Length: 213
Ligand SMILES: N[C@@H](CCC(=O)N[C@@H](CS)C(=O)NCC(=O)O)C(=O)O
Image (cartoon, rainbow, N blue to C red; front, side, top):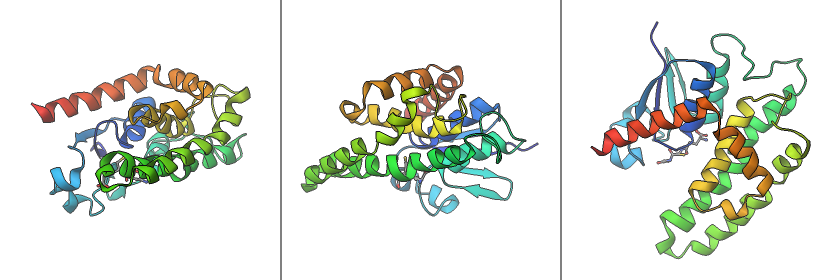
């Protein structure tokens, strides 16, 4: 059987997808690109005109949303415990947190990165800080949810944890960690201690280092 192909950049939102693949035991053909691919691997635009990562190609299907790819990989060969099925407790919350991760949490993070890091010489650092604050305020829902829980939904690790967890990992990588409460840092520790996370991270790093050599 032909493996799905996952195009991504190391430590990008594609980590949601490579991590989900490891958790689900789905073999993917991992293609690590330099960041940003639209400038450093322009031929990628022919495969994905958006120029964004991740991109998953599975047969005729092409997915460009990291959280959708994570859910897809966890369910494509049959429902696994990594997802929550309709009718099961916390199904609604599972959907909500899985979408919340990129649309509400990572969104202000990426605007912060653009204004405060990538284009700060344009005088936009102040706007970047405003988005950092916005990111911080938006953590409240996750914080409240985890007050009495180890994982977000159904008392088990799911794709919702992968999707939200990545936003907390990104916060640490881009200088937003002083805005992350200790309880969420402890949650992140629990997630990144998982063997599947470590395998995904190492696989991406191997691909990244191969590009440099
Ligand atoms: N909502 C999409 C966003 C994808 C996205 O914007 N990815 C970033 C990397 S984390 C990217 O490719 N940026 C480079 C660019 O837009 O040129 C997702 O969750 O996958």
